[in-house]
Length: 408
Length: 178
Image (cartoon, rainbow over all chains, first blue to last red; front, side):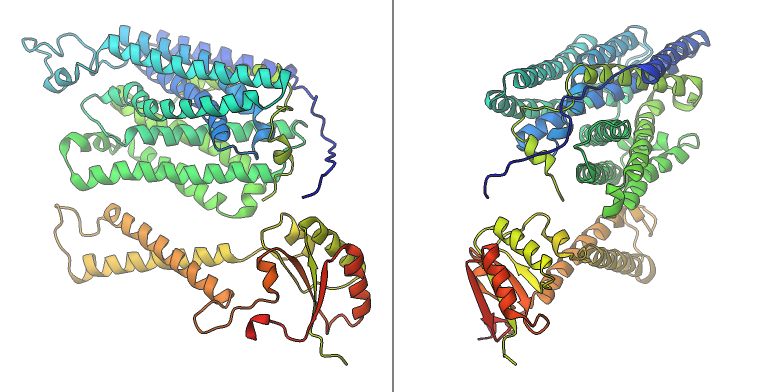
């Protein structure tokens, strides 16, 4: 093709202003969260509060980690379409260290106060002479013990946070100096990160969530959690893009970019179902008591309706709504699906955590809603604060031009 | 009355081709079709081609597969010859899902292969429809229906001015019949 003199009317020097109502409301949400936590402890619901803290801290960390995963994926695939919106996952990944600290503190505090993981962390569980002796837990004690558990968590989250720092540094240098040096470095370290992330996320999910019911195990659980993480992270990215566009920013993002994000959400909602069902089918078919116990608990009357709602909201609804091309290109439809899936995956995590912690004493009230609002506010505050510190577009990124002309 | 059926304008470059299409449309010349060795972004919009119905066809094929699978399994395992498999109910739906999924994919993919052969006249014994062989190699070809557009000289001039490297007046529609 000949030489083009590319001209566009986009204002690349625009800066996101994080102030006013948005800032006030995210701060109010954080206060609501703190008050709900206090309410939970004061009304003697310590275990339920901890379970909700774990849920939202895990959700929050997963979404931030997805930002990092998204960037690494774009680099390794040398994809150009998403360059114009890359600042959003970048801002999310910059929040990852803070999210990691919160998750670590919640897990450690839950362990110390015996509100979380008491299934494998209790007096005499591994002592054959004790009345509490549990042979299965004793057999797993080499792996499931407090120091090793916390060390794994610290190493994994520390490694992810390190890569988040590294990519943020490269992006900053690229913006200042230009050239291909930092792009090439990002590709190389993205490949390294993806290998580490791919092998450690299943273990991370085994530790933080699956070990709540330490007798039970499923090798699909890691990928099931990864699918949930990736779908919810993509929904957050899409939602931020749509809301920024509605706020008058990101003029260079059009329905073609949203279409690609929509396809991602559509595809990985199906992937989530695939993994969910693979786990369910094998347990259903083999019908072994040590495995069916997981679904037995979720089939009790207090969880059964939500078991079905989980599948409808995370599989049936997105597949039907997003199948048509037009609905992926319509901002409002896509926004609705994103919000629905974010609620849906909250429910998904709820179904993973609650039957193993509070069991029949589950609730849905001030504690659940308040803590969810609190973490959403914290995420919005930290991410938008990061976003407001830099230009809205990586102007020196080699694939920016391709992103501007993206058309499908 | 001439026997010319189609006028083909050859371009060496996709940008020249797009320019040529613009010029023809400015001159109110109706374009029959455009053949290019590779996909060109935005050409469908420019030519006003409607979106392909391939997606709907694929959906129908897939749905046929799902229905075939569920009716087949239901007839065999629930109605005709119920068996006790692992103490499960006869209508053990989760067990059927993988087969339903596989038949959906199978019907959809075979259906799409069939559709591809049907639409492109690629079945054995049928001559493929090719208006110009170089459109599969290095030329970007605009085809204009010569019967619908009577002023052939004017069309030739527009093509030449737009940078066409070769202009053909074909008396047959498809070269592949020869």
